[in-house]
Length: 318
Image (spheres, rainbow, N blue to C red):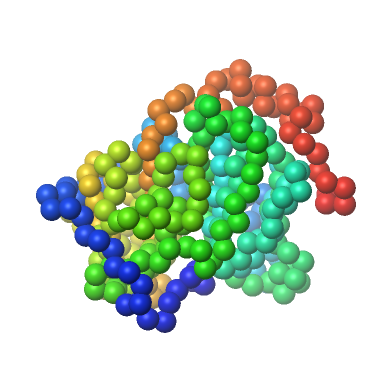
């Protein structure tokens, strides 16, 4: 994986251990992401499929995109499409993706970078591989997370945050066996670069075989652990998860993740996403590209899109 790394892991700060007496979060459930296709036909794994939406709050949806090795001419993206009422967080681990939107925003996202789009009141955008990647092919691997917005933020003007790979906050486990990249939120007093409307934390960790990572976690957040590659044991009973599986954790003050000593298949290390946030606790009305609070707001979103009130495709970009 080409996400941010360091030559000397001991050069980055260690993660402060949880407070004495803090309770480790046990595993509530483990689910396996089904495979599917998105956009013009690129492969994805639906990480949250089969999980009660109330356990995911404030998150709505997450796709692991790839990992896939494209031949020349094969890379695919999405057509122009609308969003309203939530944020898309696109974290690219390998490869390159280009975003454009109806306000003229967007940009190029590549290895280890994140593009955070707050759709808010409504936007049109497109995600596509650049022409040089289409011509050459190559490795493509990333994750797109949908973060819900509370009702008072669903009507904010749309905006982008381009978070470069070198902006992520790097931390390590005590023994140097795990490197964490904090994209957003607070981990043991260290704050990632993402500016969030909803209080949340988003971490990508790489753990050496046999290594263990302990992350203090806010008691008022939920906690989700998704395996991108490799095999892990999580929680106090060492529940096993492998690539493409999601562990929903129960209440407590910290999470623990151990990498299996013998990693399966092509994986040489364990890669996991750890994410959680403060539940919004509001009704969710979700259909297609819109996430609102009520069915009437959903109907209005579709009407506004059809009437062109979410913007238009910039000239020369269709």
